[in-house]
Image (cartoon, rainbow, N blue to C red; front, side):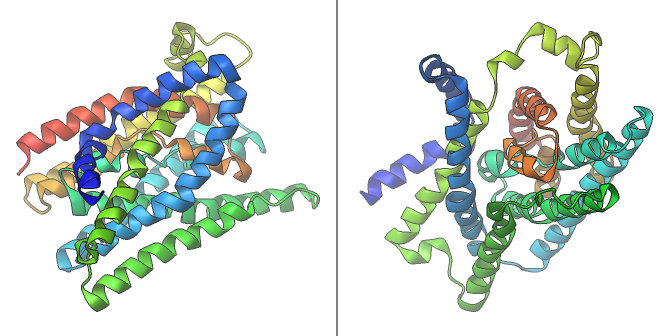
Length: 353
């Protein structure tokens, strides 16, 4: 049995995981013809909770258990944290600028700001396996930081903004923006990180030291990536993939009742696909050319800056973000960014030392 798992592992790792996006998309279309799309969306939401609670934390635990936090890793961790903070500050500043430009007033302004801020969160945990196949330690560290930021820091910022809105409107009857499963999740996720770091630092244990159980753990956590990518594909709605929708996205058709909606989608798409990657590249390229950072650091951070918006942002709807805009930018950034990411992984692996 263990040998079978070892034989399967290469096929659920690295670039082999990416076709699961297409599998999820096609299978969902076929099933939807029988059951209807609404039932599938409800089921996928439950499956996503299983991924969030039972798979992603264990994957992060395995990554940190196998990571020696020497000086180089600590410096990269600091750089990663700074880059992620910069990305969110960029999103917040860009959101404020666009809100002013669009003459948005409260509460639409707050809704827009929260949606822009949240949708700076990328699919690092979902496509991370493909990156880890080439730059294992760096990709694992960056993936963990993105997960902590998206599910530990951002929800509390959104919650704070929500409480301020309640005070301004003096509405005490509004429900809290923190559902219990999301209130617990950040601490649950961080507990796995702390446990792995302490266990490795105190005992020196890594996954392979557990023998057959280590292989089972590796296989179990490796399943996270194809399962998560299947979810990404299943989250793409075929109804969004129309020429008319594409025209609205790129501003070629600004007519209709949903003009504001498509303006939001367009600005968030621009932030994700163009502005953020360009800013990160402008910051890191001089550092790399001056040999201040290695090629692996450059590759991991740049690729993560071009990753599509994660579909798990839909879990943050209770915090007061716009559902339809988030759904559209998840779909379109996935379609545009995934091919770019695959190309960059191949190119960087060939040209960077």
